[in-house]
Image (cartoon, rainbow, N blue to C red; front, side, top):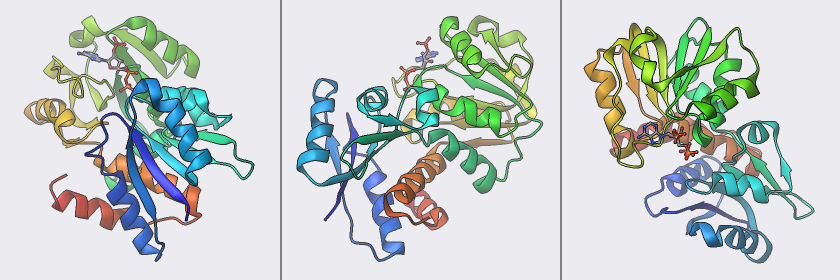
Length: 275
Ligand code: ATR
C-alpha cells in the first residue's frame, strides 16, 4: 500500500497522523501514515529513501524542514515558490517530487470559514518575516485585507517580504521598535517562532483595536504566551493555529486522495481531547 508520513524534528507529538487517519475513516480508506524524525543533516536522504524505497506517495513536512523540503523538490507550486518553503511533498507519476505550500490557504480558510471572519476591511499586522510569515502573507493579502503591515525584529526580512508582494499601497513594513506608536489593528497574526523557542514576546497593548482578532500560527504551548497577551488586552477573539493545522492537512489529503475531507468533526474532536 501507499505510504504517507510527516517529517519533523522533533515529531513524536505531531497530531498529523491522527488527523489523516480521521480523514481516511470518512472515506473508508485504509491508510499507512507515520511520523519520521529526521535531523536536518539527514532530512534530504530520509525523504529520498521514503519516496524511492518505501512506496512513499506523500509527506507532510514541519519544523525545521520546510525550507529544505522546498529546496529538494523537482517541481514547486506558485504558493511554495513565493514562500520558499513547503509543507507538503507529493510523488508525481514519473517519480519526481512536487513541493506545495498550503499553509496560507489553510490560515485564510480557518479565519473565514471556521471563525467567520470577513477579512475585507481589516487592517492586519503580521509579526515575523520568516518561513511561516512568508507562507501566509500573500494569502492574507489576496483574501482582501485592507492593509498588511509586516513587522519583524530584523527589518531587512520584513522589507524583502513586502517588496516581494509588491503592493506598496496596501502592504508595508514598520520597525519592531516602533510597535508602540503605529496605532491599532483589527487582525494581528503572530508568525514569529518566539513561542516555539520558549521566548516571550513583549508587545504593547496599543496594538489591539476594539474589535481585534489575534491569531497565533502555532498551537499548544508555543501559542500560549501570545494568546494570553491577546486575552489580557481585551481582544475580541484569540485563536491558536489548530484549525489551520487541520485545514492544511485537508489540502494534503485532497492532493493525495482526490477527496475533500470534512475538517470540522476532526477539529472538534482534537479540541475536546485538549489539543
Ligand atoms: P519559521 O519557519 O517558524 O518562520 P524562521 O524562518 O526561522 O522560522 O523565522 C522565525 C521568525 O520569528 C523570524 O521572523 C524571527 O525574527 P528575525 O528575522 O528577526 O530573527 C522571528 N523571531 C524569533 N524569535 C523572536 C523573538 N524572540 N522576538 C521577535 N521575533 C522573533
